[in-house]
Image 1 (cartoon, rainbow, N blue to C red):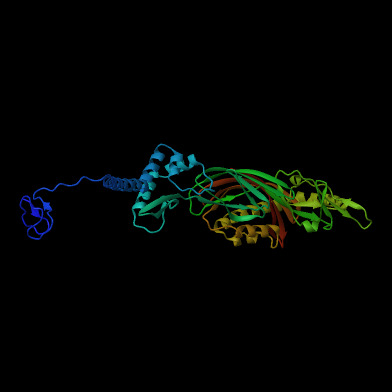
Image 2: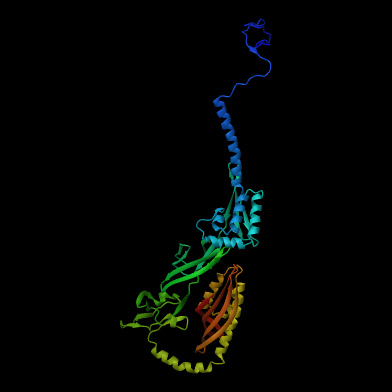
Amino acid sequence: MATCTHCGKALKDGENFCTGCGNKRATRVSGKRKTAPLSKKQKLTFLIGGAAIVLLVAGHFIVTQMLDPVTKIKAMDRAVTEEDAEGFLDELEVKKDAWLKEEEYLRYIKTSDWETIRERLTGAVHAEQEFDRIVRDDYGNPFFIVKKKPFLFYDRFEFEAVPTTVHVTTELSDTSFEVENETYDFKDPVERETLASAYPGTYEIKGKADGDYGGWKETWVLDIFSGENGYDFYADFLYSNYGIDTNKPEAVLFVNGKSTKKTLAEVGEIGPVPEDAKLELHAEWKNADGRVEKSEVVRPGDVSFGALPFLFGMEEEDAFLEEEQAPVEAAAPGGGEEQAAEFVEAFRTAYEEALNTRDYSRIEPFLKEGSVAASDLKSFMAGLEEDGSSYEFLTNEVSAIDARDENTFFLTTRETFVFHGADGASVDYDRKKEYRIVLVDGTFAIEEITIRDTDRN
């Protein structure tokens, strides 16, 4: 039955107006009401809205998977298993200017108990933390830094590979080092200055240096490991320094026939001289008559002792010394020479203890006060660090003794020892030295020590 839509009164068939309220007939039919079909615009709106919801859900899932740090760790683990260095490094932040050999770095990671490091990485990303976290091996060496950064409504994790700092020490000026197509120049001598950063691996380093008496070219191989204290590289260019023995300090020094325009007094010491330098040195002096006198030519490689002679007008004195020296040498065997040899052997024992305890006072009684040997050794030991390195002396052999006079002896020795570095590496040394021993108030004292040859493994 039809009813008025305004007041609800029942309407009879044929009535166009409601007899109750007078409104024009507009009826509602009891029972199910028909729904008008959606317009194209409504359908499009619903379709876009549904698609947006699907995209949001899918996007959330994709972003969550992309940012899941466990996914990165799984990719790294797979790369280690498959020995895929490039894939492994794709998951890491690597310092751009650091030395890196990808295959060697991955091999180092794999042999450093990767399974344990992997578990520590996983633990680091699941830990409640606000700051960067360092992942270390069982020895405390840093491998990775785990960084958590906000990204929209999510947390994003980054793994940064930790390189080792390489420090260099060189006693020479104007040195340069080339590693991995990078060149590092140093104008002045440096002591433990940062050279570069490097990831674990084996690197070849080529060094060059220039000096007043020649140049050097050396090549070293460095085995770099992870270490918080860094790697110490000592650029041991082989050289010698020579004193000057002259009776005319105002004479001018000539090198390979060319004047240095410096007097022997101004030069003071000749060096550093490369071990394989081909040098011919002499000095020239103008006497009171204006005549130029020349000393004999001296070649550093041919000199037995630490001082190079630049002597003038010494022919008569040399002849006198030759006559006087014979009886001294005849009386020396079994006497002063033997005692001088025993003195050097005692010094070596004390020197080993001094090096390992960093205590200069243990060798001070063996050295002549104010001598070159005292100055050099005191300076050297002052530069030693308490870094855990040590020295192991193996042999000390006196191979030759030359008694210059009854108070002066020159001893040639062969000494072998092992240097144990703080990083665990060891270097074997085989050295030939010359000691100048003098008698001071009846007691032996070392005046000068010259390294003549060094062989390293």
